[in-house]
Amino acid sequence: MGDYILLAISCILINNILLAQYLGNCPFLGTSKKMETAVGMSMAVVFVLVMAGVITWIVNNYVLVKFDLVYLRTIAFILVIASLVQFVEMFLKKSIPTLYAGLGIFLPLITTNCAVMGVCLINVNEEYTFVQALVTSFSYAVGFGLALILFAGVRERIILARVPRPLQDTSIGLVTAGVLSLAFFAFKGWV
Amino acid sequence: MAKSIAQEFTKGLWDEIPPFRLVLGLCPVLAVTKTVENGIGMGLATTFVLVCSNILVSSLRKVIPAKVRIACFIIIIATFVTVVELVMQAYAYPLFLKLGIFIPLIVVNCIVLGRSEAFASKNGVVRSLADGLGIGVGFTLSLAALGAVRELFGSGTLTIWESSIQIFGPSFEPFTFMVEAPGAFVCLGLMLCIMNLLGKK
Image (cartoon, rainbow over all chains, first blue to last red):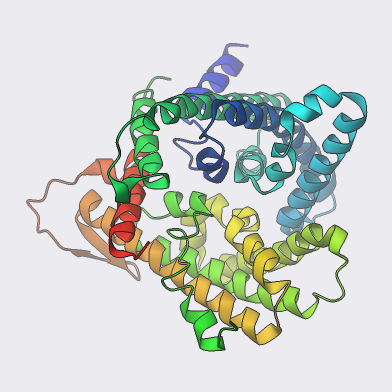
């Protein structure tokens, strides 16, 4: 049990997917201008990432490895993720419309979020067991949400500040992300 | 106004140079630019995928039904990514190890899908080829530039084809901040700022 807690902490804080692993940076900059969109995106990522992590793990170990098709991994994973996102979207639309309305346009965008594909590949490359893969997927997703919501909070304040013209928008966003990343850098060597 | 084929190529080098003008596909940009060499390798791999998928998408644009086009584009892209992956594993193994999961992640690089959707699905084969090549070369140049800045200040060297050249001499104290994650963000932000200063807009 202790191992799993350690794994979770290292995935959320030390190897934070956005700020230390450089995965999922497009939505990080794209959806962090408003707190609402940041929360929506984080929820959608937690939801899809856990499911994708589990399903790709099963596909990899019981289909690809078993039938010696490992070279098809990239194609298989992207197909699993794309169809999963489509399926989740249709399912939520029918059965939980309130959640569907909350996640809105963020669901389809997740297909091209490299955080999802990246975590699936990390799970397979590190040869995690099923439970480990589940824990990592969930913790990476939580780390994604944490960093995104923190960053959105900072960015909402920046709007009020007077930023030099060439630095405006994405440019100052990246520099801010750097500072935030420096803060997370302090967790290194913690575990 | 219709652009000439040469203009389709050159627009990728300045007007729409990724990732500065089109802020897309940031993950590989930040992750692999610790050295110039990695940046160039990643850039070339992405260019190959971009050109091939642009050609195939534009030649199939009348066959692919509009409703499932995104899924079709992704499969086409994934095929070429697999090709790159296997070729690099065979002929450039050290680089393949350094780039790690960022090679399969070219599939979800928004630049590639973005060009298929925004350009190749609406234009002819030759134009799409020029567009893919232009954007690809622009992307490679940006990665090389960012890699050069980060490597120069982060470790005082420039690595090209496995040989490091000391630039600042032995007494240089490496500024390790630049090769770590925070440096990547700050450096890209400042380069974007310089681009804005130089650009017309």
